[in-house]
Amino acid sequence: MSTQIPKTIKAIQVDKVGGPEVNVLREIPTPVPKENEVLIKVQWTGVNYIDNYFRSGLYPVQHPYTVGQDAVGTLVQAPTNYPIKTGSRVFTTAGSAFAEYLVAPRDRVAALPDEIDAKDGVSMATQGLTALYLLKESYAVKKGDWVLNRAAAGGVGLILTQIAKHLGVNVIGTVGSQSKVDIVKQSGADHVLLSSDTSESNVKKILELTGGQGVHAVYDGVGKDTWEEDFEVVRRKGTIVTYGNASGAVPPFPPAKLSPKALKVTRPTLFAIVKTQEEWDEYTSELIEISKKAKIHYAVHKEYGFSAEDVIQAQKDIQGRGTTGKLLIKVSDE
Ligand SMILES: NC(=O)c1ccc[n+]([C@@H]2O[C@H](COP(=O)([O-])OP(=O)(O)OC[C@H]3O[C@@H](n4cnc5c(N)ncnc54)[C@H](OP(=O)(O)O)[C@@H]3O)[C@@H](O)[C@H]2O)c1
Image (cartoon, rainbow, N blue to C red; front, side, top):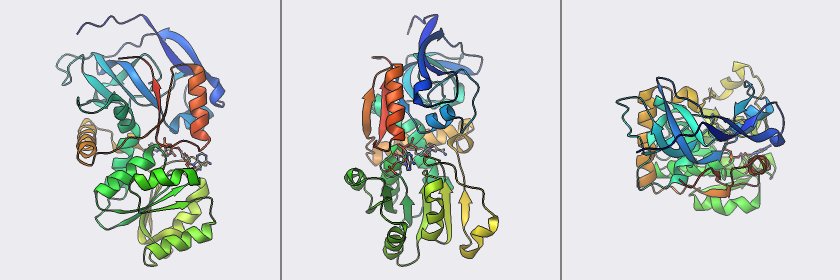
């Protein structure tokens, strides 16, 4: 395949810490892959909650930086003997994805099978892989377990419920508003609770549903606001998986906090769990298999254009708690 690679590309960048309005669209030199890297022409990318952490300074970054995590596009340049052919459709979690072309480490790219829609591939990248590793490793679910899935209508949340149900797990989801209840039920959740109800009534309901014992694991990407409640709803010897900070970071705590129920707390990130080539290959192929077998529905909240205004709006939308599923950004037609 011969693709004319341009000398410059359009990219969304951030020059300083701030709110969504600091995103700007500008022309930058086309990134050049090094020895162990590949070049991808981006078709679709998507918003992740982590974009807010980088932009707001919660996770420090060097400025200017190109925004974005995951993308689906065409592999246009790769080292000799690279296992994926140039011209193939691929998905990646390489970062710097709000751009017409991106450079990815050679071990962060997977071929997207023909039968999987390009838009689904964007959801599969960061959010799908996260949902899978949470259920496989952070607390490895067993058939019949009870789990609590916080922000169950979100990008990770909707996928997590579907995979958990495929594995025979009982899922209780929480959502911030009534309008999200139906979509979470459709994703397969056995029970959906409103986080706006009192904590006492939600704790009571979760204990009732689990025969008074509590859930085997809480998957919590909300963070600060739900942290204390997690300790009340998890069962003895259970696991709290704190994997995000949508409401703020959880506070430091003494290990003795875990002792009354002999709990485990883990704080994983995708980048630390899926790190080696072997782990990437294992996780991406398993996610592709599960997506086909369980017919995972990758819900899309909205498709946005590739402009600073669109990105600003999308980041405001995801922070505003009104979104369900993935926020996609169309960068090019192919
Ligand atoms: N550790 C990892 O490897 C990893 C990887 C990917 C994502 N994450 C984390 O997973 C979480 C979900 O990510 P996502 O990209 O799929 O986002 P998302 O779930 O689509 O959006 C975040 C959701 O968090 C909920 N939320 C609760 N309190 C909030 C608050 N004060 N402000 C804003 N939102 C609040 C909202 O749902 P309700 O209104 O329904 O509560 C909102 O829709 C995030 O915390 C993200 O950082 C972690």
